[in-house]
Image (cartoon, rainbow, N blue to C red; front, side, top):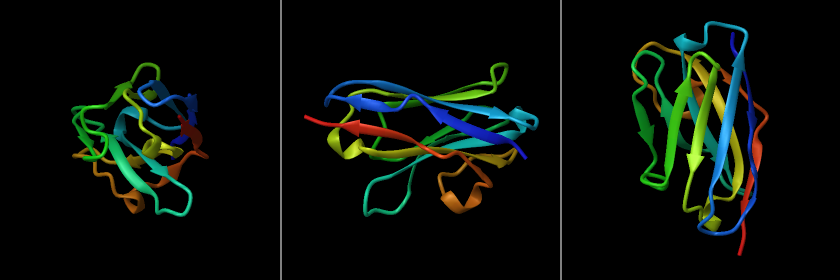
Amino acid sequence: QVQVVESGGGLVRPGGSLRLSCAASGETFDHYAIGWFRQAPGKEREGISCISANDGSTIYADSVKGRFTISRDNVEETVYLQMNNLKPEDTGVYYCAAEWALGACVIVPNTYDSWGRGTQVTVFS
């Protein structure tokens, strides 16, 4: 089973940008779909984006579409989440997760098997 570790969170003003990284190890990375999720205090975990293993197709939640971009580097075994035009409502702990899947990815938390510990993103005025 692949293990994943997130990095890149931090404090940023509204309108700012951050790039999160999800580094994988342990198994054949290019057989795994990777999803990004976030959880704000008092709220349920929300799926925000994913990238499939086979063709790199992507899905975005409506709340981040046009502002966030997910990409993967199978050589570096890393998935990136570029976050632009950040808003206060983007604040939360961001998690990446891996799912062994050769088809299209989905941003449903319980379909993912391996989770990182998360990285905090805070957008404040």
